[in-house]
Image 1: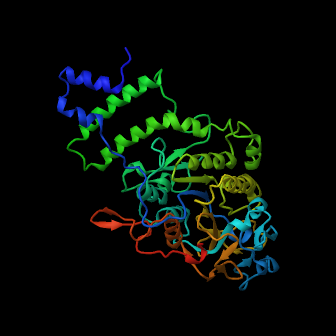
Image 2: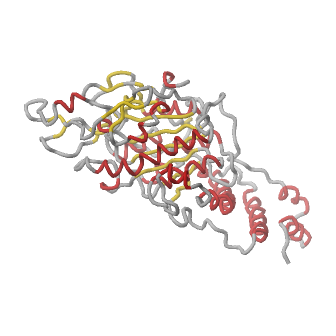
Length: 452
């Protein structure tokens, strides 16, 4: 006989398995650590789509034109020790603002009036691992919570049936799961990884024959979990583990619908450059990312590339790979920006384009095709809620080697993202190992010049 949760609990009580005095506790246990929380002040953005290009996108070939390098290509800088390396792509102005983009990104360039370009980014580490976790966690040496985890901890989620922080990553980036790890924050704030394919999340579909049967099983499980938790309320790992099972159950209802693109129109598929039924390529990631934020997910990260040289932006040997890499992301990203605008979502959604560092303006010998790592200056951009579109902030020198003015450190970048979400980066803290920790550690200033 099918029984609902309430009847099962009463039957257990009647059979002496539980005390009647515990009924009210079982019927109304309220523990919602992911419920929406009030920000420190009125936010401009309610959610974030964070685009991360693995490997280090060359700023001087994409977003930061350097005529001097092109003019002196293959010429020695100092007695033949280093040679200037010009760009293999032309730049042109886009939009009414006239911001320059290279030929690699004509579609994103078409959205120039909505984009704030930052040409004075600076990381704290020139190694992939350190630079990647530095950009995401504020520390390039120690494990720390990811920015998405901090946002989840600070603000919660709008949809209890979906995680507050989700990451679409076909492969593993440098630093692997640390990119979306929660470290000392409760593990329920860790990013949930989605892998494009037939089943983006393992065990996404319920195994019970009916919804009512699953509800009965979950209700009984909830009771026993909360009994086990009694007296152990301070065990954050236990509480998070219980909550993770509850969220997983909700996901079996909400996630399949979120990943189902069959009802998206042909025009929308064309906008993202995505063939109907295809799950490969950045177009699928961008469309699903838009659908997730529509359904209340607070922070969505879309990762392009993994640690294989030919599948990321780490062009030590062959810059021509950028042609393929850029085609994979250019139209989908621009399409997503247009789609967000058309749906009225750009008004309270922040879109961030980031990479761990840029590429150097020199080569050891003339004719070398690739570029080395360069963390002293690189480019990123933002668009959407609270951002001044159609502007360039900061500048590199004529070589793209050093910051010329208005440096933006990774901590400044993080502080600004949190500010747009209504959070003071100095007040968003978590007590651990005897002291308060924060995403920006003891650093960071909000870049106010780029805010509306």
